[in-house]
Amino acid sequence: MPSVNSMSHGLNETVLDILRNNPLGHIEHSALDAILGGIRQYLCIVPGGPGTGKTTFMHQLGDSWAIAGHPVVIFEGELARASMLAKSLTRISGGELTYDDMYSGDMPAAKRELFDSTVDIYARSIAERMFIISGEIKNAGMRKAIEEVADKYGEPPLVIVDYAQIVTLPQELRIADERIGLKLVASELRRIVDEVHCPLFAISSINRMNYDKQTTGLQAIGGCNMFEYSADLVMSLSIKGDKPEERNANMLLKKRPVIASITKNRYGSCGVVEFEFNAPAATFTEIG
Image (cartoon, rainbow, N blue to C red; front, top):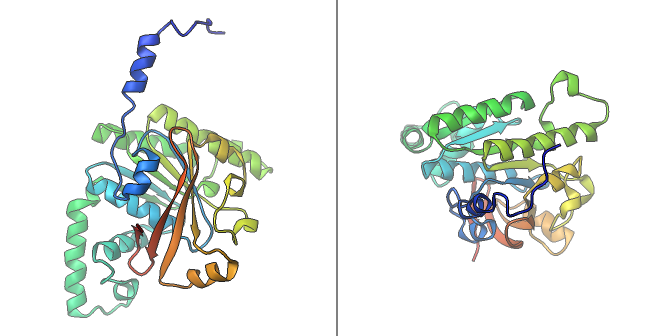
């Protein structure tokens, strides 16, 4: 057992830990950035129901982080690299280049010219610092990939996990009780943040009973409350609307009102930020 020391032991170094804890940078959403305190070494869980744009929201944040000159690692368990790239190209084009345009199989000359120019912008501003690892998200390989990128760029990457409940454990740790398995995943995400010193955003499903609520609380995180306990921040996304019928109508809109609710923040304040989610343009814009 290590020796027990009073706070006078190593106090100066502990004080420096506080003073060194500056944000790694800031995001384009100024109101949200103010609540988050910028991007720091923290674990943020991002729960939300279907249609709230969780993947698009975090992917947009990742693109803007790469544009600002920082490395990004996305562990993507649902979408292929091509689908993620298509989202970026749509966003860069301001929505002029749609999924239908890119996947029609016969792109008109004007659209092909726009496509090529948009790809060129992506190549120059994002591609070099963006690492999308698609397919099965293996717990054992996550840390190695993150450390490799950190070593290459001399700074910890922004890490996005899409999504937490589908991270797979090594065979010897796979067990019948799903909650215990998810607890191990939550613990490993926490360990990665603490030891690799990276900001990590893990998208999360929510319990079905919370699908029809405007603001999802901490208890809504799917599968295991260990995600809530391990997180420094919990930022849920939900469709705006005072009543279920209003939220259902808003869900069908191409431009949807979405609320980001910070319901846990160990290092700052909690609060709510409203966004417009332009689904065809794959873009979130702060309102107000």
